[in-house]
Image 1: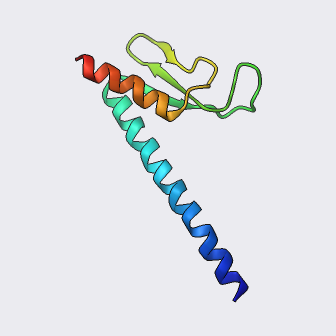
Image 2: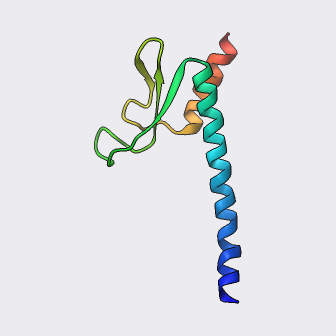
Length: 87
């Protein structure tokens, strides 16, 4: 039964990861509806790439948050929320 304990201990992490992915998907859809794209870095981490996210304004073809892929999903959500409340 040692495998059962390991499976039970790993289950909450999988659920937490799933919730995080769902939250990310919601933010991505919100951004798309508002004319933005949420980009995730796919390159190795280096001085101009911190491995997180970038918010790109597709209407004006410019980065508005996370120029070095340093923006978190929470920062992007806050930015989009501020824009939404201004309208």
